[in-house]
Length: 518
Ligand code: AHR
Image 1 (spheres, rainbow, N blue to C red):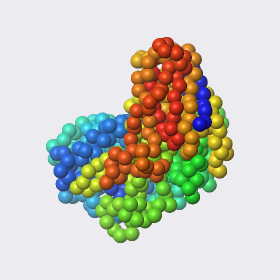
Image 2 (tube, rainbow, N blue to C red):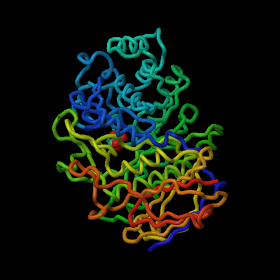
Image 3 (spheres, helix red, strand yellow):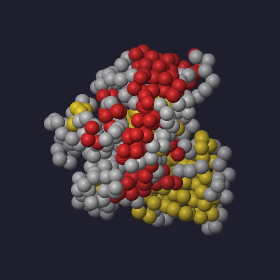
Image 4 (cartoon, rainbow, N blue to C red):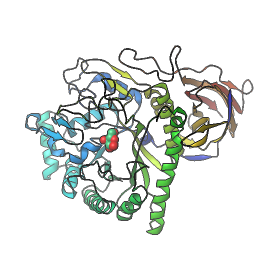
């Protein structure tokens, strides 16, 4: 049995919870769009061809903002190909994913899907093969009311499709995708990208001054240009942009589960590094405004996956429309890691104001769907859905005093990882806690300061199900093998009013505990 004490103090706050921390991502990649959110022939398809079963799961997931249309895809995409009558839309090669793009689904369809799903659209522009002119045209097409070439074209297209011609009102825009990566179509140096992003940003804000812009940051902490890329890009764009992006994907290497379970340590350090770089550019440039972070791609992704039916290719071999790509099957271990990555985002909620799990359906996703078949929740669905639902109010700065666990990649780490929010309006304290120990249960005591707990409102845990192991997953045959179950034995220190809450968390688990406090 391991032990941990978590001090939860009413006065130690980090920031208000940004609803945009619970974002997702829909890329034209693999089966995320086609046979994911959109499948006109499916028995569950609605009048627009959107899958109602997937839509229901997306709503249950609670994603608030959704990035679109890429990803690597966007760096070779012409947004004009995806608007207007379907029969006139060109079929193109998508070089990023070696795929045929039919353009049957485009901007109007996505905006309508997001409206029905109750999610904010975060639109990425192509700064790989395209530039300033196409960027400002897209903002005019999307957001200008009427009476200009592009806004009237939007109205015309909408009228022909029998939908509303009202402006889409897209506020959040990504100035390209991963342009620091040599794999990216139109890869650039930081100088080249910084200048282009500055000019595109300027032109876009001249069309609509109310938009918020995200400059491209590093594709990962491992990039050789990490740090200098952010510094150069922000030196050019500081006045024009509002956020800089971060991307990070994690996986278990060579069966080293202990290190994998502690990857939130890596995420914490990555965020701290980007914050330091932003603030150094702010100081050097004598700027007063604050730039925040849009962590617009993060997840577990087995990038060295086997190319089998279960774990398809990273890139397709034949030219096909919507091939199976990176349909990772997530285990109990992956779900615990996803929980801890979300803890890291919350812990940095004063600077990370937007975050998007990549992606929503089928492609490294919490939701899976089969063509002409069912849709279901992967294991990683659960920590995301609960945190998105329950993290409200203010994020609290916790002090965790826990037993240590040795790891090869991160040194000794706390066996317990946690985050918490307090909602003063409802008087509810929400704790999100992971036991990263693979063998031992953990006795955890919450030491409440400035609060008195009166009732345990909710206690749920995701762990290894009976008869399973840490690799157990939800799949087509067994869609509900792993989920949240009641966490028994959560106690207030004394009966009635108390300043301590105790519980025992099973080995390898992620839990949520909500208490009513005064
Ligand atoms: O999410 C999958 C891919 O990962 C995205 O297209 C790209 O931006 C990143 O490298």
